[in-house]
Figure 1 (cartoon, chains in turn cyan, blue):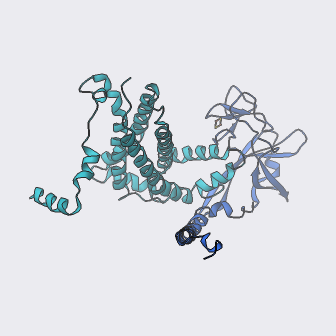
Figure 2 (tube, each protein chain N blue to C red):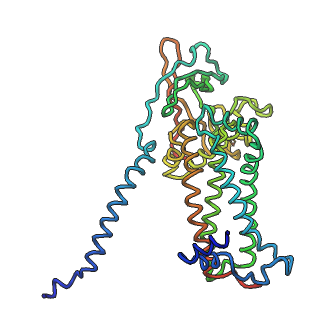
Length: 224
Length: 170
Ligand code: FES
């Protein structure tokens, strides 16, 4: 039955080359941990992607209960964590995943750096990777405020003070981030929410697409 | 056909027009959104309203913490907030009202907040310190003196306005 559906679609739009191109290609020996266990260092990039997928999914589900409003944000988080079935698990995934993704990203960066895999012709992909790293830090930063508890609030106060320290454009940057020149409040929370949930993920998807296309285009770097 | 008419080909003309129209459409779409996003930056600075904070005869040579409440409007959210100042008279009998917000990363500083430095302001976050006049102690994290409140006195009452950074350069 499934085969028939597949054939029916394939006959009309020829999807086989599409998924073949994504899924069906050789894994070189030197990056295969089953062949030589020390090749596990090549897994960190994939693990980063895996955790990112968890973050996206758990984040999507969290917004079913979360509201970015200073009266209700904390209560909605408390509710989803204590009253909703498996709420603690879903929020826990997002909470811990946020840290794990940074760790994985860092290990992946170390691997690329110490193997010199960023060298010509892969410099562009290194740059894209660094941009992804910044986006991830931005996601961590904006997500930190959303539970709207004391820790979140004061961490953001401090962050905005740091932004304010930029020469010349500091005050503007702070206002732009916080939505108000002095208050860290209602407008800050909605802004951070928008940035966390729409703007940064959009940028992340675009950069990840470039990252992966470049890998396929250039192939994985050779053995050391 | 003359040479001149050949200078812009039909293909080029279409390319230019389409790029132009596309550019206008993109700009027309983005302009309202960008203006929408940067609106807080373009708001005129709020006027510092003076608030009654303390009676003048309460103010001593020792910095004391005075709290007061004021109405605050944050977009669609209105609330009353509590603010604080460290107020004292200096040796020339002038009133000094310092903001308690640490100039390092914004924690709350306290006069004599550390037993080891009973005559300084102390910030518990990273052990930042300030002299009595608000000047930051060199070698501690803060890089600037504490902000000073604008004030006025009327009929024995101290009114505080906005906290302003002291002495320009950071
Ligand atoms: S915030 Fe006061 S010393 Fe760092």
